Each structure stands twice: as structure tokens, then as C-alpha cells.
Amino acid sequence: MWINREISQRIVEIARSFPALIVTGARQTGKTSLLRRLFPGYHYVSLDLRVVAEQAEESPDSFLREHAPPVVIDEVQYAPGLFRHLKVAIDRERQKKGQFILTGSQKFSLMKEVSDSLAGRCAVLTLPGLSMREIRSAGWKPANSGAHTELLVRGRFPELWAEPTIPAKEFYHAYIATYLERDLRQVLTVGNLRDFERFMRACAARSSQLLNKSELARDVGISQPTAGEWISALEASNQITLLEPFFGNVGKRLVKSPKLYFNDTGLLCFLLGLSSEALGNSTLTGPVWENFVFIELATWLGYFHPDWSLWFYRDQQNHEADFLVQGPFEHVRVMDAKWAEMPKREAFEPLKQIAELIGRARGIKKVEVAVVSRTDSNTRLGDDRVLAAGFDLWKYLEWP
Image 1 (cartoon, one colour):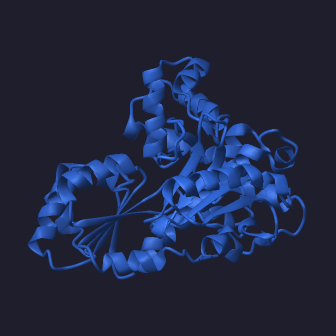
Image 2 (cartoon, rainbow, N blue to C red):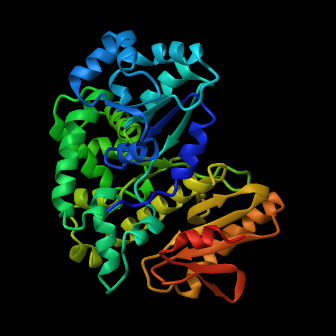
């Protein structure tokens, strides 16, 4: 089954405006399938094959003659030397748009090559896993009380929703093995892959929490600089995101450490050893749900509002909110994630305090407040600033 991706039109429009386009994203988010579907007349070549990657790296001119544009080049990070030659090829016919469509599973290394060689010639987009609306289009419906935990454990990789018979546990077991053997070795040198897998599991146990590298290093038995390098590797390969704290001047001292989130709750639950049955009764349900809400916020903003900002809020006066979304014209939304069918009214009070704090400090008349729970619909609760948002979070984000 093919699942339509809501970023498709944006990809096509950007390809019409730039000579080259890079689409990054973790393995298995559907980059190759989507691009081959959007650009059916393009030649396709994958550098995932070692012999092809070696040709692109060692004989880039002959590689580009053999694979002339328009072309989709998959997993381009395996031949970083190719970028300089792509620049020459683009400059020969600078007026032609969409000639090179590139994919990569590692964003930081790609960004360095782009900034060095393709600045002004290349646009960059990130393809995440499926959004909640895309998952619904694939047929998901909360048919029973366990459907929500099943959704969190299955995650957002398109293959798992296009082929419902694939067992999620086996999928993630193979995913981690492939990731460790292929992507990780491109980012850094790890002597013992078992140590890095233990590190991933330790990070999973800290999802939705402030990142403390020294504590993480101590628990895994590695140095703090190594922990920093490994966190960067997980970021570079699109496995985790570090959400930065809100830094606006609101008259309070704000924390400076980021929060750690995984980019897929299915992978997160696999690393935590949680089945859908175990998740429903676990003390980790709240952090996993918060992680789910983060992914949905980040995905939707990346698709449709890339100019909006996503933060969390925490200060030393014990004011905290899981998420703070800042749009244009000082449009601010303060949000918490609660694993409940309908949040209690007192859950909104801490958020109202933060909203008033930010509103006074920045001269904003209206700061909205929302608690994201398992409710089936978005519901105003008496105050026009207060709302209980549910799984269909995009409906709230699209509200004026």
C-alpha cells in the first residue's frame, strides 16, 4: 500500500527552484520510494552499494557521465568527494533546475559538504516518519483502549503501516543492526558496537528529560567527551533530536540544557523493551507519550510552518512546560503532554502562569494554552485560551 506524504508538493516545488535538492532523514523514512515516485523520469543510482560509492568517490567525473542528470542519487554521504564535482556540473548549466535530487541518512556531514560546495545551489529538506494524519490515512483507527499504546509501540516508519503484517519487534531489531553496521561507522569510529547499543538504550531511558552527559557517561562506563560524540552521532543520523530551552527574556533565570527526544516512538519502545501491553502499565508511559507529542509537533511544523520555533520552557522558579510553539506576530502556544483521556482543569494552571509570564514580558496579549491528551477531539474548556488537544494535533496547530 502506498501512503501519500504531505511533504510531496513542497519537494516538487523546491526542485523547480534549485539546481539540486537534498532530502535527509533516518533510514526507512521513505526517502527513496517517495523521490522515485515524484520524479519517475529521472535516472536512479544508489551509493548504498559499496562498488558504486567507490566509483562516485574515486572517479566522480566518469560517475557523473554515466549517471547524467536529471538523476536521483541515493545515500550520497557515502561519497563526500562527489560534491565538488556536482558543483562544477551544476555551474555548467546553472539555469536548469531540479537536475540533481540527492538523499542522505546523515544530516550533519551532508550539511558541511553542502556549505563547502553547493551553497546557493542546493535546497535541503528533512523527511521524518509518518505524521499522525498520514497514519490515519493508512487506516489506523482507535478501535479499542489498547490502540493508543499499539500506535506508540509500532512507531512511524512507513513500511510498518504499508505492510501491517510486519512484526514491529523484528523490524526494529533489524533496523538497529543495519544502523550500527552502516550509518554509525560513517559518522564515528566505535570499537565495540555493543557499547554503543547500550548507550542507545541508556538514552532511551532518559527520553523527554534534560540531557546530562556526565550522568549518561557514568552509567554506560564511558568518558564524557565520548558521550558527547555519541550523542552527536545519534543526532547526525536523525535518530534523536535535542530540543533547546526557550531563551527569551522573561525576567526569570531559564535552564540551558536541552531535552532529549527520539525521532520514533517505536524505536524508543523497542530500546526500552516495552510491548504495547507493558507500556500501558509502565511508569514510562508519560515520557513515551511526551516523546510522541514532540515528534508530531516537530513533523507538522517542519512540513507546513518551518519558520515557526519549537522550544520547551523551564526556569529555576519551578515553572515548566513541555513545549512552547512560537509563530509569526508573537503568536505563542504553551503546551503540556498528559497521558489521560481528558486532562483535569488543574493541569492547565501551571501553563497559564507561564503564558502570563511570557505575555507580560513580551507584550503579547494572547498566549494560548493546551494540554495534549488522548481525547478524541480538540475541546475548549471555558477559557478561549485553554484547550485540550488530542491525537489529531494538527487541527489545533492550524487554528488561528
